[in-house]
Amino acid sequence: MSYKLRFWVEHWSPERIVQEAFDLISKYKPGLNIAIFPETLNDENVSALACLRESGVEIAFWILLKPDDGYFPNERNMSVFCSHAKEIVSKAVEAGVTPDYVAVDLEMPADQIFGLFNASPVGKLKGVVRLLRENIDPIRFVSARENLSEFVGWVRSRGIKTIAAILPWVALELEGQGNLIQNFMETPVGGINWDVISPMWYSSMFEGSTKGIISQQVANRMAFESSLGLRFRYGDKAGISVGVTGTGILGTEKTFESVGELVESIGAALAAGIRDISVYNLEGVVTRDDPEIWMSEIIAAKPRVPKKNRLLSQSLSALRIFYLAFSRLIRA
Image (cartoon, rainbow, N blue to C red; front, side, top):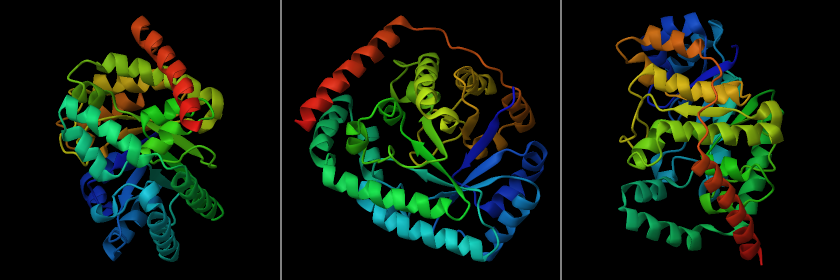
């Protein structure tokens, strides 16, 4: 099965990627979505990016902010992000390392993410109620979406494609025309001319954060059903991000214990017709005892429809009905 494989790389600079993983990368040639911070484009990293490009590796700049500025782009820092990202892209073009893609990782403000993940179950519920009051702001949402849409157009006018990394529940909303969840998450996605839309269906994290209530198998089925809907609406623009093989910004994410678990997630996406698959993260594969086996099995993944879960399908149908009713109420 042929598909486009990418890896998210959050913790390693381009220079370290070349030092730690060049042989593996140059052999299998996956795309790399590399975290780019304000200080990343120094001489050493520019040379490393040029080395990766010369070896035939497709590069995406995964542009992030300093933690004090919110880290991930969202409604509250969109103007700052777009200005910063333009500077990064312009600097890369001048240095001769123009990326193939720019990846925009749209997530809630980092302090909100930490607050929800670290709270008790009751605290999580209270936090969601509080954020419903604080986050839903139609004027701010529209303004942020306009800024982001202008930025995406600016990037694409330079021959660079774009990837939107989005939250999985936002992907469910994108099946239709609403924007309530996007507004609540402060992540405008719909109505923007992306080249790839990549929901982060991290099955190991679903299992870990719900204490096993949502198993990896159930999460893969959710990803499969969501991918069918996203592909129906967006065609080949529909992608997916799967994982996780290594921890991220939280540092506590549950990771896959075996490559077989990752291959199941990839198989579910392939069965839904997705052909643009990003794995989080490269570091978690390269630092395994057997990275060559991991990479070869990832490349060889085949489509596999996850076992149907009747309760899940009924729950998703009920949630879609509730969403439509609730969104109408909010608009009213």
